[in-house]
Image 1 (cartoon, rainbow, N blue to C red):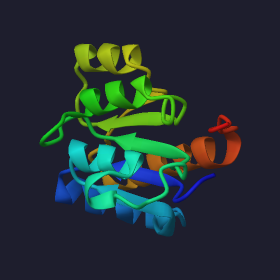
Image 2: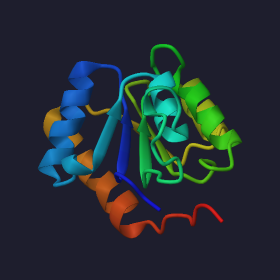
Image 3: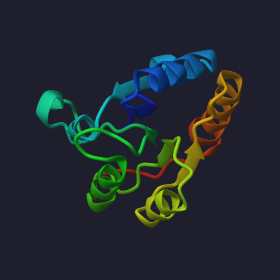
Image 4: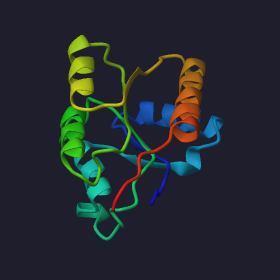
Length: 147
């Protein structure tokens, strides 16, 4: 079962606004849940904390995950997602301004499906989001989840 199509995990208000504007321009802003730190991301996905009572079997089609997050960093969020059977197969796209080889290697090593550097220019960002949408929400066959 799927809930919103995208979970955006982004702590920077400017980057969040940019992402939401780009998503809206691509017709998918209504299909986005935004969380602003690593704990909130895990709470949302596992229906704990402020998201207790949410149906944890309802997962996003793709998670756009920033790396530099408060409370729990993006790589640790990814580690926890991949270690839990309920979220192990949910596609995760790291969306980060970091071009560090170490971040890329560790992200892929932990099971990220893709690594995209955040474009600085809005029009480039809109095109990047359009490509993400085309691949992850249209072309990609999502893995079957649950029993």
